[in-house]
Structures are given as C-alpha cells and as structure tokens.
Image (cartoon, rainbow, N blue to C red):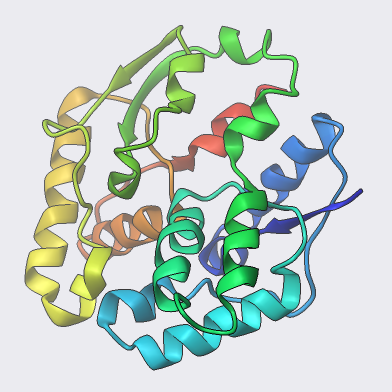
Length: 230
C-alpha cells in the first residue's frame, strides 16, 4: 500500500532539497509513498485571512485528490490545517465524513521516525537554534529530543510566532518583520551555526526578512538535519 505524501507548496517552490529529504526519509523507513497529482496548497493562508469560501474550495479539491487515502504529512502547519481547520469548515456538510476519515488516517513525522534506525540520528552533533512551530504546542511529540547530542538554543519564548502567522506579512508588515528580526537577533547572539525550523512557511518568512536587510543566516528544516545524517 502506498501512502499519499503531502509536500507543502512552499517546500516544493522554495526548498526542493527539503522535499527530496522528505522522500528520502520515507524511502529509508521502508514506507512506499506517492506524491498525489494536482496536490496543492492546504488552504492555510485563506483560513488565516478569513477567506473561508476560498479555503473551503481548496479543501474540497484536496479531499478529491487524496482525501480517502492513507496520508503522510511531515509539515506541522499543513497537518494542523487538515486536522483542525478542515473538520470545522466541513462540519454538517456532505464532506464531513470524508474529512473525518482523512483526519483519522493522516500520519506525521513520528510515524516515519518510528520505522527508522535512529542510531545515526542520535550521533548528530552541533549547535543549532530551534524555532518550534507555535501551532503544535499541544502535541507531545518533539523530534528535537531524539537529537540528544545537539546543543540546542531556543528563543526566549520557546513557542513563539515568527511573524508569518495570521497573514501578518500582508496585514501588518512592520510587526511581522519585527517578530522575525527578534528571532534573528536571538539566533545571532547564540553563535549557533544555523536556524532550524519545524515548518517551511516560518523558515521562508524569516529568510525573506533577513534578505531584505542583507543579513546572512543559514537555515534548515529539522527534516534536513535528520535526513543528512542517514
């Protein structure tokens, strides 16, 4: 049985190596995956802007593409959209049952890591600044705990918005940029070798803010850190 692998659109367009590493982790875990044809945005930007009609149309398209398949989503923001936003927007609609079936069947990074030989991962070393994904504070799984030999640095508030959420880059660009700059300043002060993100939307936003101010930073998705060790 092949799982449908949901690769976020921002990863596909801006971080193709991370997309390849998502496929690599699935392959090394022995899990057969396919990337659904015509799979697109999960709809999160439209949910955040309150454009629910468009978000619902996107959701219906995603349900049609791979909604009834067993799915793997290694991105926390997209998975959160499927598991949290979709049940709300499709409640008491003809798509309700299909939505709940999708939520029941979707798997995350912990599903992949559970099937990998983690000996090499446990030997990863270095000094990294971890930007946790703020929308998943209720989840118990923490992939960074597997990397016990890494010297992790965290923002002052470990779960903090980078400024990309709730459409702030368009609705309040000044505040959005300042939130990203605060993280960049904290990262620089630690002397860590790279900023590590659990989500590529946050990663791209921080990169954009740094680039606009000619600040040089190195970024990775935590999937890259894990995949590069295998």
